[in-house]
Amino acid sequence: MTRFLLWLVGGVVLGGIIHIVVILSLPRLDDDTVWTRVAAFDASNRMVVLPEIAPGAPNPLGLDPEMIYGLCSLDLADGPGYLRGTLPEAFWSLAIFNQAGVVTYSTTNRDGIGQTLELGIFNAAQTRLLAQQQLDVAEGVLVVESETDRIFTLVRLLPPHQAMRARYAATLAKATCRNGR
Image 1: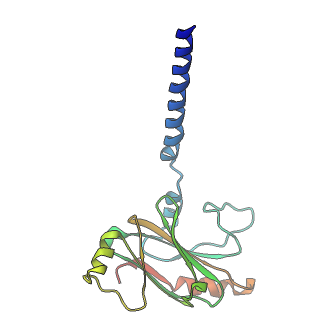
Image 2: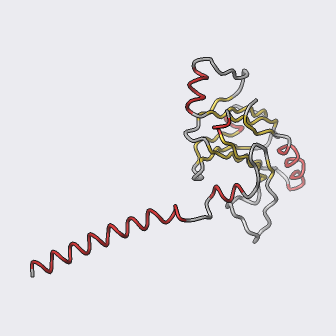
């Protein structure tokens, strides 16, 4: 009887270990990640205004159809990333995501930034150079440190009226997002 219980406990423990390993490894085996969905928009080092999301249409990033979105992906190994633009006075927000799709920084125009967006995104090594004054940054640039090199930014605009969507999208398309100044 004791031998049977030991085998039973051993089987349960081994089954639990196998279960945990399988559950933790499944996300790494998935080819359809946030990063691959972002890469499909070809937004490397440039601001891409995402197409309007029609009700019932595929929405691979799970975005709100009422908003206008600008997407940009950067690799900070190629140098600091800079996001610049003048945005409408209506509500806007900006989020920086890591490669896993986790927000690492977020701000809105209600944080006292106003309409002008001047953002510098640096990795840890570039931030150290900045602190040692070996890297120049223009005055007024909001400095953000990223833990990872591969990131993407998402700018969201909320037009107060449907008739303003085209003008807001055109304004967002003028924003720049790239490595270097």
